[in-house]
Length: 122
Image (cartoon, rainbow, N blue to C red; front, side, top):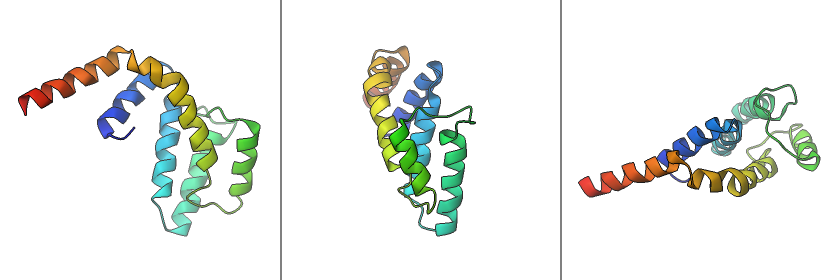
């Protein structure tokens, strides 16, 4: 999750598992945290809600009811931290569920191979 190449490889893997929305949501939350303009924060929070939290969204992430209630309260006055609980829950889900499978995938092995070749050629 630290490097762009690692995130891209993990995202590619999640796409094969039909759970790419988890990574997209996590990245959108990271982007929101960097914002300082109140009107931009409100707009980004609304888009994140519509794209990943709304039960009407095809990219809805799986969150428990407690976290959904927190988000609904936070959306009354959105901030950079509106989705922190949800982001942690999705990160934990990816870490425990998807990431171990990713570590055994061909996508991950290809990434390691390419990084190994780059370091040898450097």
